[in-house]
Amino acid sequence: MVQICKSIETTFAKCSEAMEHRNHFKNGASSNFPCYLIAICFAVLIVFSGCKKDDDNVPKITMTTEKSGYTWIGIAGSGDFTIDWGDGSEVETHTLLAYLDKWSNEHVYSHIYSNTSARIITITGKNITHLDCRPNQLTSLDVSKNTKLIYLSCYNNQLTNLNISKNTALKELYCYLNQLTSLVVSMNTELIELNCAENKLTSMDVSKNKKLTYLFCGGNPLTTLDVSNNKELTSLLCGRNQLTSLNLSNNTALKTLWCQYNHLTSLNVSSCTDLTELYCYENRLNNLNVNGCMMLTMLNCCFNELTADTLNALFGTLPENTIPDKLIDIRANPGTADCDRNIATNKGWFVSFL
Image (cartoon, rainbow, N blue to C red; front, side):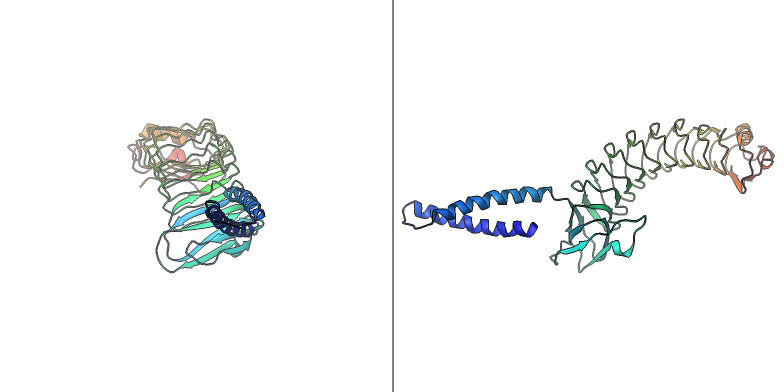
């Protein structure tokens, strides 16, 4: 279809030229210009307009890169697709392979750039479901026309903006290690996994993402984080932000929580009955409640403001189970030296305090 449109475009150009000649003759010169050619020109114009409209709706992915040397992109789905590497080389046509739980060499398409300059890579295909374009020094990425995309990995690039509002089928998004200042995921209600760590995000709204099970938003300057609607969350990694509070009362499915290097003064995870790992070190905690966390095996609460009485109360709520290698790290708290560590060791916990 694309080739047909190009042919029509060439014909249309010739018709336009012919029409100009006709207008010249019409303004005074005699002409035997056949009328049927005029009709053909108008027909070509109509078809050409349709081609342009179709071309605008073709699912395209574009990305801008300044990378030199070896470049690769992972693409999966079904049907044929084309890739234009944007450096004047021949446009490639390939047949997509389905994504079966993991990437393989058959999903990888590579190119070698001879120099460093800005170029736009264009990928065209109707049934692209998975795209892996990391790390390619991308400064822009447009996936707005690819509505069938369910997996997008674009981490470790130089993106400052990422619009995924049209990608409502998206289930997995990995955009960490970029320079994003905002990320809107309110339209992506099918999201299951989201990793947007190591960006410049000052706010995040995941209230519409009720299917989310994995959220990694660490390494951003977030001051607030509301996960009250994310009841399916099993992993929440929000360390190295600027959080002063964290409400987890609705997150009963949570198994892993990393909230280290924040400004938390109190933390209550008593409703997280399946929690196995808790890393809350380097905060300002003066209160920590793990009562009811019967599966807990790892608790790191070092470098906080827990007194001896608070630590003793914490030891008293630690689960006493048969799970081996349980560890609690209480180093660098005001009560580390004076607390009664036997309360924890008698329950089978190893206490790290030096």
